[in-house]
Image (cartoon, rainbow, N blue to C red; front, side):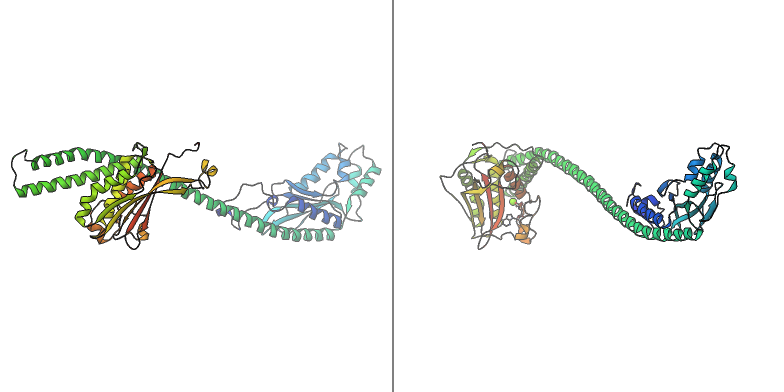
Amino acid sequence: MKSERPLRSLDELTLDSKFSIQELISRESFDVLLRSMNELFAVPIRVFATDGALFSEVGPASPLQSYLGTLPGARRSVRETVEQVKSSTPQGDNDLRLQGETGERYTVIALTYDGRPLGRAVVGPYVLPSESMPQALAQCDPLVSSDRLTQVWGEISRSDEASVARLARHLRSMLGLILFSGHRALLASNMHIASVQESFRELSEKSATLQAAYERLKELDRLKSNFLATVSHELRTPLTSIIGYSEMLVAGIAGDINEEQRDFIGTIHDKGEQLLELIKGLLDLTKLESGTLNLHKLDIPILPILKDIVHTLTPTARNKGVILSATGDAGMPTLWGDAARLRQVFLNLTENAIKFTPAGGHVTLSAQIAHVELPTDEEGPAIVLRGVKRPMIEVRVADTGIGIPESERPRVFDAFYQVDSSSTREQGGTGLGLSIVKRLVDAHDGTVEIGENIPRGAVFVVRIPCKRLSFFG
Ligand SMILES: Nc1ncnc2c1ncn2[C@@H]1O[C@H](COP(=O)(O)OP(=O)(O)O)[C@@H](O)[C@H]1O
Ligand SMILES: [Mg+2]
């Protein structure tokens, strides 16, 4: 089915739509139909679309008209016959029979589909089998040759009106059949295309809305980071004064204080320190999120960092009745990282481990070398290095505490997220520690995973590459 028209929208595609014959029928197959009609009935047939354009034709031009066209005096009657045929429009199924000044006959058939006009078929010119030439023709021009006239008259197709009526009937019913399947196919394919276009349009709209929402969220996220950075920074200055002055008061610089006052000031000092830690955490997080935190990476050994953490946190652990220890092979390679930031990572993890382990429990930090296969789904050099193992330092922070349910493990790295159980809430904290840990480990090209410490407790496994990844030795 050929269609030069632009596609219709779904709304336009109703059964009331106007279709043209060119749109509904392939010219090639219609030509075949007309040719077989012509073979059966031996009369010329021309089919015109509603706009008057010739759609298909079969049979020779009129030999009589060709001859008369060469005679100046006869041209008018030829022109008038043609005009008469052109301007006649049959109504409904009533075929229009015409006889021109040249004596030739035509039958004009209205072509409709479902009551809608599609065009006209003009059958002719023909003359009746026994019909003789009109007398007027012989006098139409002084130059006319009666022999030649008799000859071309004899060449005009012969047919009786009953045959032409049969032809009209056949043409109509054949056309009806072709149109029915054509219309159905056109409607189906247009419907299909229109509905695909409609879903595409809907999808594009949704994707544009999502894109806009995404941009807006990104902007909000940036504003939030800026806001946090500014506020945290501004909070730090007055807080430093609060902590400083409370220290001076306790030291007796402003005069003697009694035990109760010392107690109160001690609380002010401790809460001030706590607030300062929180603000530092927020600042770190905003810097990590915006990528403005600078890491000073060097080749560093891991064991001294772990030992230092054990040293720092032993009093806290002892207070809780938790045993804290660190183990590791002295001959381990160095890793590539920022010592102060890695200390922050393991300090956070160890603090958590102590916090969530009841008295009598153990918290153990252990370091070993691990060979981790490079991911093969990365593009570029990783493909060349497929199967190559990368040496990493693996640090496990294991405790015998309450553990973390598997379903919560992915979420504890979110900022401000705390596993919602009363035991967690009792311990205090802000929920920032692990999100900073995760980002710092990421910044070291490392990984952090949570496991179960059989038979009880949690274990955090951190892996940091030993060396800067270099593809050229
Ligand atoms: N070793 C652990 N054992 C059990 N739960 C833990 C442990 N470490 C972290 N969690 C859970 O993860 C949450 C988030 O930890 P974190 O980000 O450090 O925040 P915070 O320590 O301020 O609560 C904790 O509140 C706790 O619910
Ligand atoms: Mg914590």
